[in-house]
Length: 178
Image (tube, rainbow, N blue to C red):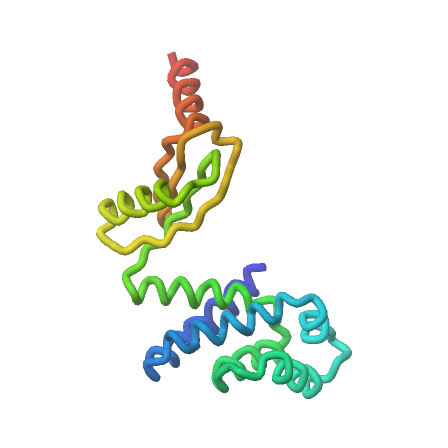
């Protein structure tokens, strides 16, 4: 797994630099997302990952499956396939998005709640996090019934835990420390 992550990171950083130099970050983002979405198709993924299928055939199939993407993003994905790294394509896109958010001054916040958020709650949380960070905030929501109630937010390596479970755990730690 670390090898895949390292490869994905290197490919994403190279792609990001190419896209930034060409002032084509939006195009690259759209094209890479389109390619990854196409590769989510089990049949296409099976062809691309199958070791017995010649590379030339994989290239033809991918071009037919995703005809409307830029040449450079397509060549990047094909290079990853040719080098035996199709499993690193999705992590590469994730790293590309991370670099893109950083470039645009957007902070990713992982928000866990016990119940799904409605639009008003989502907006209020986003506004509060924007005030705290000074950046635009993109939230990634997860429903975690184990929280019992409340919210837990992770931005980078910082965690704000205002969940009922977190409060109960802190209370238990204080009571057992006595």
